[in-house]
Amino acid sequence: MVSTVIKKIKLCWLGLAVLVLSLVAFAFPPMASAAPADPLVGFGAGTTGGQGGSTVTVTTLSAFQSAVSGSTARIVRVSGIITISSVVQIGSNKTIIGVGSNSGFTGSGLEVEGGNHNVIFQNLVISFAVGQACIRIHDGNHIWIDHNTLFTDRNHGADFYDGLINITKGSDDVTVSWNILRDDFETSLIGASDSDGSLDKGHEKVTFHHNWFLNDTERTPSLRFGTGHVYNNYFQNVTDGIHSRMGAQMLIENNVFRNTTVAVHTHGSSSQDGFANIRGNDFGGAAVNITQTGTFTTAPYSYTLDATSSVISNVTTFAGAH
Image (cartoon, rainbow, N blue to C red; front, side):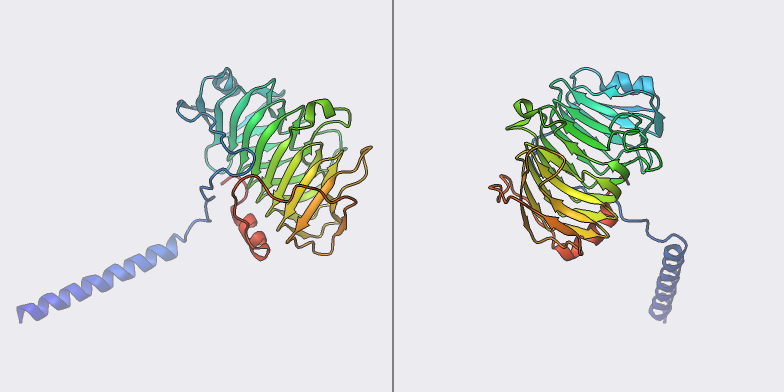
């Protein structure tokens, strides 16, 4: 008799627990998927940023400028949106990471230049950088730009802002992954000028993967002289997409294009055409104008290609700051 009563009590408690858990799940539904912790792959492999250094959290411009100066390894956590009026220089061996889904900078951009190196930009929201790219790499190397949301607007002329990510003047070994790059005229220029061959040849090695180019006009990206691997990106409402010029070599794989005018081209805007190899892409009716196929057919590193059919879902779910 006692045993039977105990069993009934246990069943009642079990039923009550299930009911409570069900109510909690209803009242507090799962949060949106967070960004996956993806390993660094591509030409930027080996970048460690501020690994091994101290960690500091900043909420003001002056504190940020102090934290990113010099070459001492440091992890700099940015909390909230900081307004900046002129470009901030980033020293070597830094990781700059936004706290939560809406931390970063507005008004101007961040720059790695003069041989500075080993920098990670992650989980940042950077917007409306007037006269300066949101992130500019100018004679820098070993850079990882990952899971950021970068944007301007197209209400001003094309020269009011200066792109979202520009990589110039012999920069090298850069990976751009899982970013949202939106609402911009001149999104990402790699190699600043046709006359920079002496600086850029043999350099400007970049990987773009799992980025969402949204409502952009051109340069998504545009590459002079260098070597570019562009895979598993989503291009939505883009006018003039991937552009290889001045002898650049590009390998373009398993990307998806929707409502895009020109997906890939290798001519125009420069005195020499570039080279491109394409495979596995879904161009969605966009034009493809390749005048020269190139010799860059195999990336010099290991990576995993997503099926083209899964690119839109993966990128729109996980790209950008979270």
